[in-house]
Image (tube, rainbow, N blue to C red; front, side, top):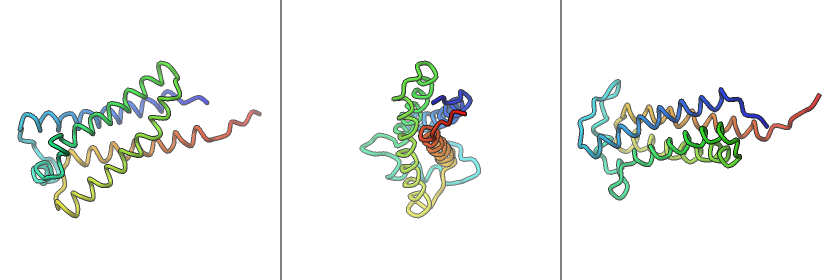
Length: 146
């Protein structure tokens, strides 16, 4: 099975945007920076909530690691064609999407505020989930020789 390079470039681009977003939030968390909030006005409320960190570690750091792993797997696959990278690209976005659903639920119904940066991450994670599903179908599609 051959995965088109353009498809992997999309994985890289989306995961890079997600990584930049999550890394920015992580740096701001540790620097105690003030985040400008675009479009929505609840960034400060969301990022100061008890749900913004797990055992003192910002959720955004987990997000940055998530996006970095996907980015690295896509680059690794382009370079080596190793099947383990495809496994990461198919299954890791499922976990990221599940986390996105949970965190978005918390924003809407518990915290009652929306964070612009969290929405960027949610869109990135959802796109990666869709790409992962498509990749799964590509792998399962029987090749027909004519």
